[in-house]
Image 1 (cartoon, rainbow, N blue to C red):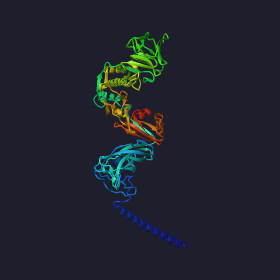
Image 2: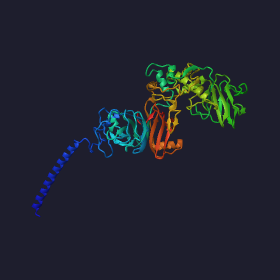
Image 3: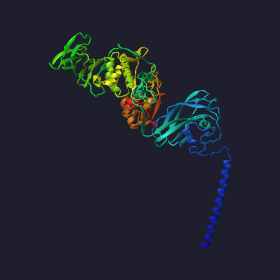
Image 4: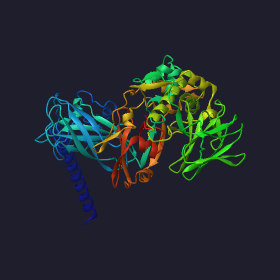
Length: 600
């Protein structure tokens, strides 16, 4: 073929293709125009993108979509979308879920959701337009990550007022971050309930390789808050409160009474007690008193085994199942036997010093061997006990009315412990197991004045000393003890037991606003602590003897006060549901159980 012929043929082809392309574009545009006029089509926009069908930012911020917002639903995976409004008579409440607070990326997890039909018409489980439970995932900015997660169908029709529980298999997002899962019912072929102003339930979920706990407060949060007492006494949020008013706020069901003839307290000062000074008594103790001492029979104090001179030391030690007491000046054994003996100061006002503790104690010291352990107990009056414990539990320069409230609380707590001693030979320990007690050595003039101002006062309920608990800081609200100390298993779930009649959950704004000469209450600030999944697994193995396998997720079973009654941890091998206070404070060592997995 000649070169001119080839050129003219190429021009003809180009013109033909160009004209054919124009015709195709015209035809495709006409097809789109026809489709746009149809009420029911298969090519609707993807609601996972920010279309008018899915007001995702509103779903996060307001939880209740605006009236009139149209949120469409699929009738099935292949069915067309419809533009309809759900009837005004529909209603629903999402009462409870087991959604995790933290989960690893991409994990699939079963979540229980309890829902109630609060509308006027039943939810059908079958037919052309059944109701099912779905969910949406949003990122931290409120953008939809997944609009229509695979939900759960109803097993039966749900009538008006009826409650049902569904189990939904949910897959976590694939990228680490903080997300929101929003639970939403949908009537197939009609619409999402949230499109008719039915509030969704939204829950924050952190996706990552472990768990970061954010918390406030220090301690169990039950009863009196020490920083709260300081705040109320100094008028941090209103009028200053007296010690009596502070006690009434934290223990509203208790009566404040005077019991001047109360029995002395028995304080364990030997191992394992440490006195909060890191020192204890093992198998021997050296005792000394400025005015001298007497060694007497514990059963009959008129039986005297030895009398020492002023400043003369005694050494007491375990000997088999008994006790041997030796005069250190003469090396003479003044007592040897299995019965307990008591050392009392010759001058009752003199304290007895014990070298191993580095402390001195008012009252007397009882010596005996119990269960193969040398046991040293300080027997002291309730007021003298509080003189030695108040400075260890509350700073002496704090508000005087706060000190008075703490003095009554400490005295009452020890009396309650005494009432539960049963077979113990002591009532309280001298460390954080009960209260930090430093004996006469710890006393200060100001705290002693607070003790004298409340001498012999106890909190009682029904005539008995109450369990007067206290902690450093509750984080802004106290907790029901039935959710902390007395949580019970109901079936396969932990639940709150009944609380104590003399306690209630107290909102504590004064604690958050409290301060002292050093500055603001440090426990009102948010703290955080991170644990990897491997660390959580290892701690569960160590404390509970259970291997859950690689960590998958963690969920909180929260009390009405916002603290976890229990913590549900899921691994690849098995799941466990652990007491919240025990797991968070004892196993993980967190300062408080007022925790979440996102800042609050």
